[in-house]
Every structure is written in structure tokens, then in C-alpha cells.
Amino acid sequence: AARRVAQMPPTIFAEMTALAQRHQAINLGQGFPDFSAPDDIKQAAMRAIAADCNQYAPGAGVSALRQALAGYYRRHYRLDFDPESEILACVGATEAIFAAMLGLLDPGDEVILFDPAYDSYRPAIAFAGGIARSLVLRPPDWRLAPERLEALVTPRTRMLLLNSPHNPTGKVFSREELELLAAFCRRYDLLVVTDEVYEHLCYDGARHLPLASLPGMAERVLTVSSLGKSFSVTGWKVGWAVGPAPLVDAVHKAKQFATFCGATPLQTAAAEALAVEDDYYRQLAEDYRRRRDFLCQALAAAGLKPFVPAGTYFVMADISASGFIDDRDFCRALPEKAGVAAIPASPFYADPEAGRRLVRFTFCKSWPLLEEAATRLRRYF
Ligand code: PMP
Ligand code: GLN
Image (cartoon, rainbow, N blue to C red; front, side, top):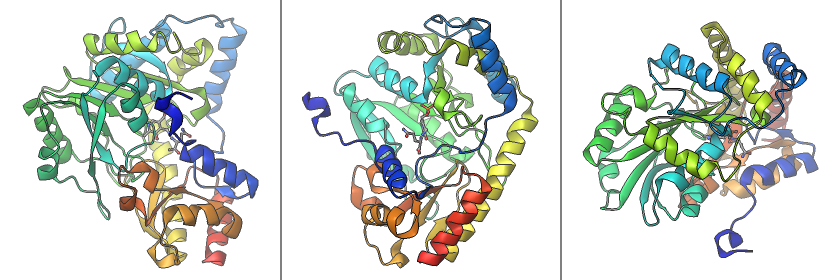
């Protein structure tokens, strides 16, 4: 193997899902819903295939999807993007982020990000020759400490990589925090890549605000999102990047030689999905809020202290009272001993020590599974 991959282990999601399957455990690890996607969008995909939308799409994505995304951002956030030059469909948010690093970073450029950080960020930065500099967010509230942000800046700082709502903590960055970050990026003339894949999963009045919508930010922010979480179709891998034409063009240059284009019928169906009424998203969030409350109660009852998330479909729990002192040991034992799988937090940190007592559980599962998981956790702990 090449040196750039020699030290890379399989992702923690692959490892824990395999372990869950081996022990027939309830998989509260990897974040993918086990319930059905909305019927309308499944029908739309089948119609697209039947209508022979089965050849390569334009590299930037099928025109209907780019038009739909322009309408979507205008309607939801009053953001204007030109479908011809400012919208790029990608193979999930993952490809958008990967291509963004390759297209926007020079070797030695530094990227500020927040730990715990989604697992693909550091490898994507490293493949581009960039250097990740992280700021650790700490429980219970994962608050942003502005003075520690300033301390990370060097003459090579080029980009801020932000994820809100945030995986794995469930933090939704507040307007005040986003204003602070926006001022910081303007002051140091930084580019920003924002990963907003959980934009519709916000609870208890928390609201998602794209950083691109703050004053002076549209010109420096590349906004990334995808269809997977909002429509329970994580396997479709329909994602996108939107932003100023020069940024989108740079990302497209990298993307064109990775995949050239994404799946045409699924992009066609995505265009229809994005036209849904707001009520759809309200119901989705209300539904997830109930699952969140249930899982948090179940974790608390088992002595696994949950940090109740304001967004995403994940909850972090402190395992200190469980007798385990290591998150990986805990997650390697749990499927066999308790019949439940979860994700250790330490792989999300540059310094694994910071995540030793934290484990992530997902609540994007059907009610019978959540109920059975609650019973199993109570029995074991
Ligand atoms: N970013 C975050 C924060 C995620 O949680 C995920 C999904 N696990 C992704 C990106 C990947 O999204 P996609 O499946 O659209 O590539
Ligand atoms: N985003 C999902 C999660 O955080 C997993 C995606 C993946 O398996 N790469 O659980």
C-alpha cells in the first residue's frame, strides 16, 4: 500500500457495524435509518429509471436538480445560487468535502476544525496535503471558546471546516457562535466549508442557520449538504456543494476526475424530493425528537449519562459510571454482552484521550428496535 494509506484503519463505522452483525446486536452505531424512505421519492426514482434517465448526467449534476437546489436555498434560507455556475451535485456530502479539500487547499495550508470531528475530515485534509488544527469542544454544552480559536491561527491558516448541526455531539451552533465565527473568518480572510447534512434535524426550537447567510460570508463559504438524512436515503449518496462560482469551479475540477458525475435517476428523484412542503421537515424533526427523548431516557436509566442533543440523530453519553474506562473497550464489549452496538468517540479526536469516556448512540431506528435496545441496556447495566 502507498504510504498515504498504510496507517489508515477501516472506518470506525465499518468496524462497529461488522461487530453488530456478528453478534446480531441492535445497531445504534452507524447512522442510517432502518425505516422506509417516503414513498413519493422512491416512486420518483423508479419513474426516472423507467423513463431511461440512465446515462451519464452532466458533471455538475442533472439540470433539474440544480434548479431545484436553487429554489430550495432561496425558499429556506434566502440564499441565491446560480444553477449554472454555483451549484455542484456530488456523490454524497462525503465526495463534496473530499473534492473541496483537493480543490481548495495547497500543500501546507492549515484548516481549523472542531473536535470531535466527523471521521472523513482529517483524511480528506491529509490527502490534499493540508494540516488539520483542531479546537476541542467539551461537554456538557460543547461551547465554543473564542480565545482558543485565535490561538490556532498561523500565517498558513486557509480554511475553517464547520459542521452544524454537529456529528457526533448533536450541537447546533447558535447565532451568536456563528456570528463570532463569521467575524473570525473575515478578520483572517479564511475560506469556509460548512457541512450541513443535518440541517433539518433540530429540536426544542433550535434553528439551523447556514453560515453563508451571515453578512460578508456568501463570498467565502462553500455550503455542503445531502439528501441522505433529510429523506432517509443514506444509500443514495446524493449530495451537493453550493457557493461562489470560483470555489465551486475549483471543487468541480477535483470532482470531475473522481466520479465525473453521480447517479442520474437518483439526482432526478432528488429534484422532486427537494420540492416538498415545509411540513414534511417539521414532521421529520418532531418524529426524531420523540425518538431522541426516548433514547436519552433509556441511556440515563442505564447509568450512561446522555448529553441531550439539540440536533442530528446522535446522542453522546458519558460512560464513566459503567465501570469501563475506555470508549473502545466499551464499544467492543457492548454488542456481545448487551446486544447493542454504539460508536466510540475517541476516533473523532486528534487527541483520543479527549474522547475516552464518551460513546455515541444513534436514535434513527424504528420504535421496536429502540424499545428492545432500551430493555437490553437496562438489563445489562
Ligand atoms: N458529514 C456528516 C457530519 C455526516 O454525519 C455524514 C453522514 N454520516 C456525512 C457528512 C456523509 O454524508 P453523505 O452520506 O451524504 O456522503
Ligand atoms: N455518517 C454516518 C455516521 O456518522 C456514517 C457514514 C459512514 O458509515 N461513512 O454514523
